[in-house]
Image 1 (cartoon, rainbow, N blue to C red):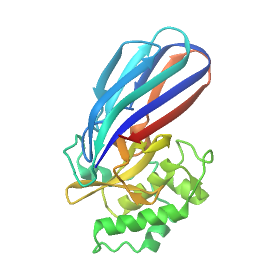
Image 2 (cartoon, helix red, strand yellow; image 1 turned 180 degrees about the horizontal axis):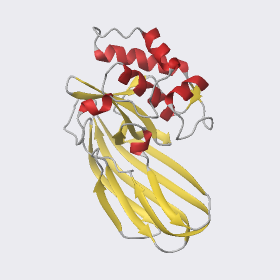
Image 3 (cartoon, rainbow, N blue to C red; image 1 turned 120 degrees about the vertical axis):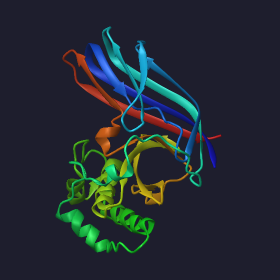
Image 4 (tube, one colour; image 1 turned 90 degrees about the horizontal axis):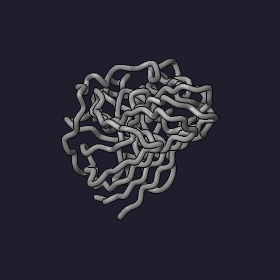
Length: 261
C-alpha cells in the first residue's frame, strides 16, 4: 500500500483571445478499485461557475463556461490517495463487463494485430491473466516509444504497422488483442509516480475483478498508478473537450507530479 500526493496541471494556450469557452474536463480521480481518494481539490482559471457530474462510465466530470476573453485556460487538481493493488474495492461503472468485449474504430484489428495474436498462441484453456501478460509483452516488444509520430485519431492497427507510438497506442493495441480473445478490456487514464504527463493503460475483467496491465512499461498496474477515468478507448477518456468563439489555435500541455508521502 502507498499513500500518494498528486498534482495534475493542464494548460490550454490559445494563439489569440477567445471567449464563450464551453468545456468538459475529466481530470478528477475517484475512489474505487485499488485506490481511495483521501483529498481532492481543483482550481480553474479564469474563474467561472464550475459544475460537477458523472458520465455513463462512472467518471467524474467538471464542466462550465468562461464568458470573458482569455488566451490561457488553466486547471490544477491536487490531493492525496491511498493505493493498494492487493485490494479490489467497489467502483462505479454503469456498463456491464461484456460491453468491453466489443471493438471500437480505434481498436478494430487488421491483419497485423490478428497475426500478433496468433503468434501469442492464445489458447482459451490458459488462465486469462497469463494470456494477457503474453499480449502485454508482445505489444511492448512490437512498439518503440516515440512522441509526435501518432495522434489521438491513430488506430491500433496503424500504430502497430508504424512500430512507434505513445502510451495511448500501446493501450489500444492491447485492448484489440484482448477483445479478439473475448476478454472484457477497458482503456484507463491516470497518473504515475514521478514527474511527467498523464498515462494510459488497460484493465481486464477476470474472476469478478478489474485488473490493470501497463503495456508501455510492460508491468501489471502497481501501487504507483492513480486512475482518473476509464472507457472503451481514448475517446471516452478525453481529458479536455470544448468549444469557443474566436479564431485561434490552441496548444495543450499536461504536467503530472506524484510523490509518496
